[in-house]
Image (cartoon, rainbow, N blue to C red; front, side, top):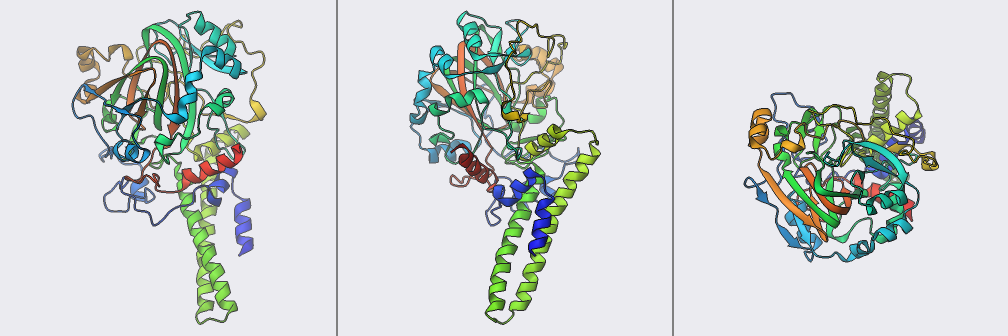
Length: 504
């Protein structure tokens, strides 16, 4: 039996091995209400009926969370004195956006983030977006590397062409993406990895956003894949929001395949569980659970045989059969991964393999990506960068690790609707009539306020003045009203425990 296990594990890729050895151990007896896709199961998301790609005539939108009650609804504001338990019950579990006003004790150090403090704290390079013009929306310019000090100097000079946006992150040897970009680690003593207000949600990424704009600059209409805790430290942000329940009306670039009950959106070619894990990882989690149960049963049976108990030999045979089936399942997962690699071609390099491993941990682009609107040309997107602007004399990939969660052009999660017509009902009705059927909500976030935005809520953000924001992304919870265990498996909680060991 030991040889079966050893041979199976040797054949597994690092990310699958990490998943099967505890990263994604399942809690099989937990009731899964929020992701009960078909209404006839336990909502696990693991059955073929729950995870299959649905046919065009089937309902792909299973969202069951809070929806905008009336058009042009104003998102309410509550006090940060709310308890984490009540916050989870009333907003996180219900998938309801809300604005928090007041200070959070464990985020108090963010108030000392003056330009001078940031310049002294952050060393090295950052990726900065340079827009073609000040009225252009964010996410449509060139990404250029420059020193953080140089970027701050530009901001202080009043420059409104450069914007500090989402950064590439690195992956470890198992393909697990870092929680934050290298420059953010210079500030890691100023904030917790998980603020108390979010309870037991597991962080996926931590980032800061910074720029200038007198007239207001738009992000473009899009959604993110994770829950967002967005803290405005300077300036003002205006959010236009649409529920995941209106996803089919958003004219997304990607082909919509499924909206999970908790709002997590899947596009063709990137189907995930409701909590955001790759389906292969989810299958590995089930196989891992079965292996653990079989091993425990085998140990008990071996002890029973040694003690000469009645029926012990039969129990031992059954335990060995169960363990062999579990190991076969793990090997099948690895073989499926190998087959997929072969179908993609034989000329892939190691970086490509590592990027596949990253997908197992839910790596996905977020926020404002390099993109174009449908009625614009591509002349200024990802275009040539002059040597003077490319301040790239000492940019390096730290530790030689692959960069993941890279910004991409024309990502699936962006709407084709140009930001500059969002207030023009006549033009929207003419060109994008489905959007007129969606109910929109709004909120303005001032300095010192925080927006909680659940995963896959479509939003267009307009930034005003000299603006600085800090945000967390969290893996979207899929357990109904369970503060202690917001996910229906231990996948992300175990992954977070491993991160904490690494960071210690």
